[in-house]
Amino acid sequence: MKARMIVHRANALVATRWKNDGGATREIAAYPLGSGFDDFTWRVSIADVETDGPFSRFEGIDRTIVLLDGAGMSLTFNDASEHVLKQAFVPFEFVGEAQVSARLIDGATQDFNLMIRRTVARGKLTVMREPGAFALASDVRMVFVARGSATLGLEVGLGQTTLGVYDAAVFDDSVEEPIQAVVSADSIVFAVHIEEIDEPAGFA
Image (cartoon, rainbow, N blue to C red; front, side):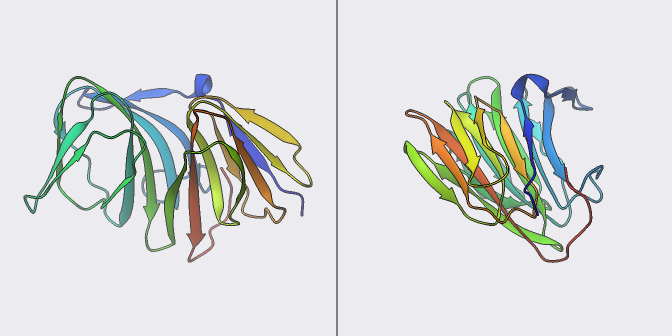
């Protein structure tokens, strides 16, 4: 089967303000197609955090957050533990059920967010920091450019596509040909790996 790839350009992402008006979220992609917060298998977004406050809780969801821009924030959990998210492009994982309060260190931040419903999938985020050509693992479902640029290509079917800052490419789970990512100098690229436990229908 010929592979499919959907490219999400940064300038096409739509910002949705939070109910508390403390920030905004730009959804990049969710799987399966048309899924909402109650039934997505995985979801990727960019959040603009503008004020201190609590995170929304997501039962049954494993979360990964990565600082993209800004001085960062201090995350305090309900067990009194704390994590300072201040180093850009370093993933931090936590469970969506946790009560988390965020305190901005020095002004607004911009963050990459990966959510995975643990009853139907497991996954992780890896970071490519060095320039060069990389063969992506077969479980990669998304490539996101956090800084710089990258070129994606398949040996068969898709040709080549260049991604700029905050552009993303989502791959159909039918991809069988080797996927290659060529990361430019001074670039940082994220790869989202997803392994489904129970296969839902659809693609986004």
